Length: 186
Image (cartoon, rainbow, N blue to C red; front, side, top):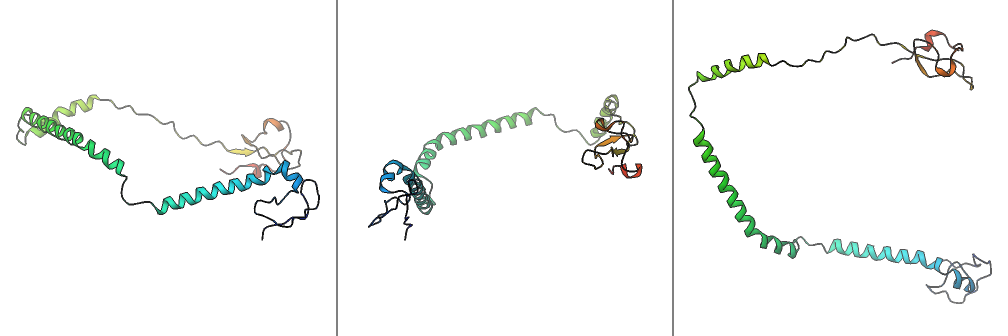
């Protein structure tokens, strides 16, 4: 049973309808419905469009076939003779190039030729100078401290500083804590 209001939400007049139809306004009286009826129909329209999209989506999912579309198969069939000719031409060209390259290479020499090539490469490798990046020696990391001066809130400042001094905001102020507690753990 849908909601049946007793009063209009715009003017507050009592709503007395004898028969409530699905298209009857659930918010406004008959007078206000003529002016503001669009506000009742917008949510209904959105719901109807959403329901329509849902039905079409579910129907399309259930109707999905395992066969590919006939349009795609026709395009592939018409393009396949050209593709096959191109593939055959490419394979033939590669085979002819491979045959030419095999004829141009000199025959392999006996096993004693391998050390000669290594001997020829050894001086070349010595001449090449590799660039080595020297890393600076590890310096002892500077100890980090907390500033420790009293803030407006009354707590020690938690800014990190080098050398046990104070931060830019608290220069010249004393620390609230002893120096041992101001060391920041890394």
